[in-house]
Length: 284
Image 1 (cartoon, one colour):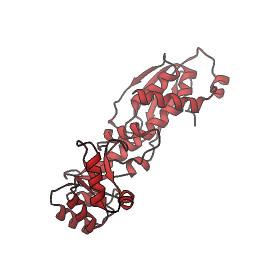
Image 2 (cartoon, rainbow, N blue to C red):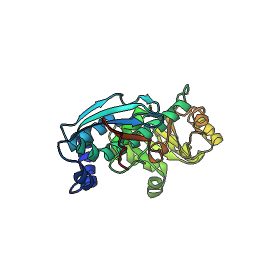
Image 3 (cartoon, rainbow, N blue to C red):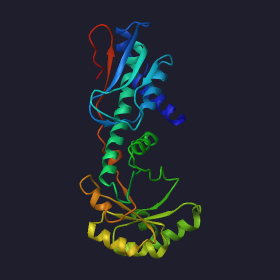
Image 4 (cartoon, rainbow, N blue to C red):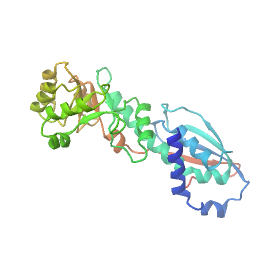
């Protein structure tokens, strides 16, 4: 949460700068207000704590009452949370709080769709490093909320020998040897392969996990038969909601999907000020 708090502080500086000139011009200090944060479409909620942190950093006196927890499936019109306090503070915090909830809920919602498509198979949906710079911790959290699993967080906590590593070293055998020699013994070594011959090389080199990258289904089945339980298997590349079930049914252990973070659509969530007068629509 410390890292997230730091990120939110920087994001607020970016958005507010020297001051929210519109709100300062229109809303007198001391005027109290109350607002509802509302789901406008069906979604899997993620980012409730991030939104709370935004409101608290803008004004620690703001009250934030969540009606639902992350992971909840919400219908259109559901009140996600109620915030109350200085009206000016609510308006200033609104956009960043919504941006984070919309983005994270989009990731959780899309991840849940992928997870549902492969139910009753042994495969697990995992994410990639294709995340928004600065938002990786939150986006990977949203993947978990949606029922997916996290691949390595960064370059420091997992060994994945990719095509360019192999090209730089010369061959898979030498790449695995160097990794085994210098890496901590607790880390598994994964090798990316694109052909059956590379799968054979990775097996012979003793790879713990073999990634089948951009292989068609028939080639994937041949590779799985060759591996025969001697290594864990990850399918990657070209995965979408239409083919993920077919990939899972080949018997792979993991299916990595970059789209769940880099292509998830932000969900429609709004904030509406509530009072005795007419409802004032949220800022654009």
